[in-house]
Image (cartoon, rainbow, N blue to C red; front, side, top):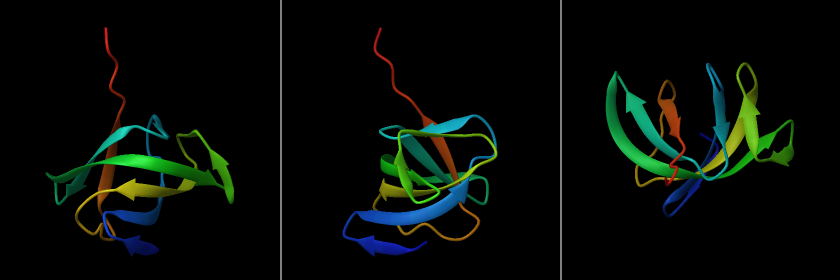
Length: 83
């Protein structure tokens, strides 16, 4: 957790599996339970803006969510697709 303003916060993390994309919807998981939903509003990797981060890489992100994320929280990224 780096900073917070109103409903947005900047946090850092590492992609454990799959990928995370800018604009994706997220679920915040704490102690195995979903505690919040939000949206990824921006991603950075190695201090450069990017649209996605692949498995195994660290990133910084601007997340829109109402609660403060805490160390150890997991972010599950979901892309919504209309058919």
